[in-house]
View (spheres, rainbow, N blue to C red):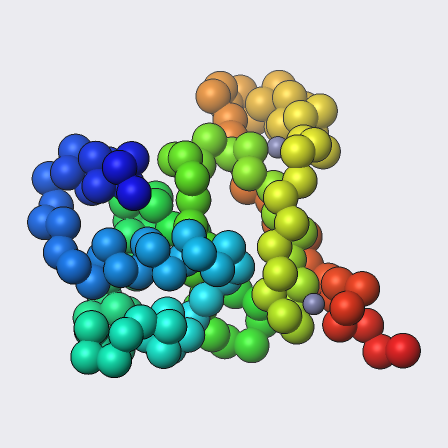
Length: 139
Ligand SMILES: [Zn+2]
Ligand SMILES: [Zn+2]
């Protein structure tokens, strides 16, 4: 947890218990969790749902967690190991919310083309793929 504590401190935010507990849960699970799922993974009485909801938003602002929308209207969050430099591509199962990190960047050429056409520099991007994993496909 050392890095995360350090990053929170650098942001001059108070490192409260719930935030550390949330990071711990997300680190253990390695899959997108809703605030409710984080809450039920915590020891009883550790925190309340409203605090977790607010903390997740704060952690998202700090770019320590990333929000995923799997299309069911529930925001789920996954831990980011590093500040997002635009090269964390994910493959996410819509059903079980499994996340596979993709090493390959598929859009560098598109990025160069967009930069050329728009005159922008310093482009970054975010890219996620959604689908059904082999386990969740109907047999
Ligand atoms: Zn699945
Ligand atoms: Zn990329």
